[in-house]
Image (cartoon, rainbow, N blue to C red; front, side, top):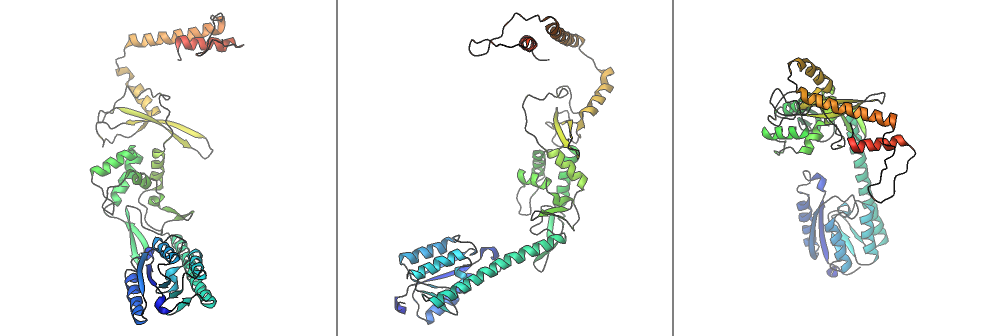
Length: 408
């Protein structure tokens, strides 16, 4: 080992970023203690490096990586730090430190109560102490997970409560959750507007902005968070944690029935433009606000795996965003229209013309099937001159019918 006067030290102080509250003075305390030690022992400190980062993962500390690079380049050849666990809590970083000592580039590690030189016994002790720090770190993670599982079994979800609830702390730990008196009524109304009035997520977002609704951090709620809130089972009394479902011990904000109704309303399926015809969209208007009427298809998978299809009509709210007219099924709408038929003034000439066109279409199909009226005609493809050859005359004649008269 080199003479003490030839050693060039780097002072390294670190605190874990995960626990800033408990370690607010940690770095300052380390610096003060080690500078006093350096003054007593006349240690030459070339550079001071501080860092707020966890050491449980390899190669994730930028300042520590820079420190090792500078040792390799010869900028300094010794480290002064509070304890070995400030340098490493994982096998990867420990291996890099020991490797630098084996190469003769790192001469000494000077800690508060002991030193480690490039000596087999001292290096072995250093590895044991750092490995012990890793063991403590791993055990801490296991204990935390066990505590979280126990908390879930008592009906309390670890972590911050969702918007509409607030955490109740006891001894700096979450003991229960209760309603946020300011926000809970608004969150409940969100579910009611979607479930009972057919509002979409974007309509809920516009409504929340119009009433200047703020999150606990005094921010406007985003559209993504609106959907996440409406799909969160926490509000009806259950939650998922660690891949398992738990029953909450807190008071639900909404009923399970309303929550399921909201999920059906929020379901979306890929749209096929101009493929679906809703016959009553253009002839109906909202009786409450005068807006147009739109329609959509909803699918419900039953326990028997059978899929029920329902068509709903509802106000598009173009004239009044707060229109409370509920959605209605197509069957209910047809029943209402039938009751109004005697009072309607119908354009008989238009209806008769449409009826005659349909009769002509049916007669044409019958004639094709019975008489093969177009048997002598030929079809050519859109590209090229090769004629279509088919042995099925009915298919060929049906194609001719589509080309001349269109689809029904």
